[in-house]
Length: 360
Image (cartoon, rainbow, N blue to C red):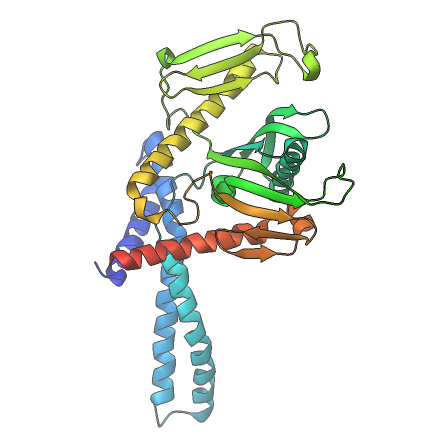
């Protein structure tokens, strides 16, 4: 099918969906939600396609006016101005349309579970993990997303051994999925008297939040233990067995929650994290099967690789996957990671378009 034929088909489907949803009683409540989602996904594609069709038509008309030797001189001058504008607009709309037609990651619109853990480097790594966690919290605030802290395991010196949050909002996973990986920091620790630069690391995992319809978990596959919560240094948080540990027996994935005083709430939080981890494991398995030859692509999900370095003496942040260096370290740690997110998304789009071209 040619691109024009495909666009005509999409426009026709958009019109059909719009008319069907506008007719009262034409769909059940369940079907209404499904069709509304399809219409919402099609709308930006159709709007871009219609704008491109109109621009191409106006370009033809402008060129016809210019070619008309008997035409009015003033009209020709206006047509030449319009032609120049349209010659730059048409390629832009064509590029926008190609991006809109790229295969979508079904998880992009989902909320996300963020997990940050200290890696090599002892207390310095734990301090860096806490800074990364706060960076994402501030980025969420900038986006008006809800950032719910689910678990924090502190070191007692301001660092985090592990921190987990549930982030909800529009296209959360799409914006954060490339943050998964090993983040490295280079700086002089406050305790370093000789001024020697230390290198430490923290790992970040961003998992699409899975609903029960995405991942069905059999009760028989779970081992659930309850125990008494405790705070730093063994300090008792409460005197009831409210902490929950859930083991998914087939995969060995273990989740523990003790932040809440209610055993029921801790279990609900643990199940949310477990579903997200199982969903991500299934996504990674499917991605690996489909794209074994595209290991170098942005967002491959390989967390064993160092993806980014934060160099404090030079005030720079370098993303090694796309060779992008920004001298905005303090701004980024304050949550201003928009430029990095946009660059990674653009690189993924380019890689997808290149892959489609190779297949042809």
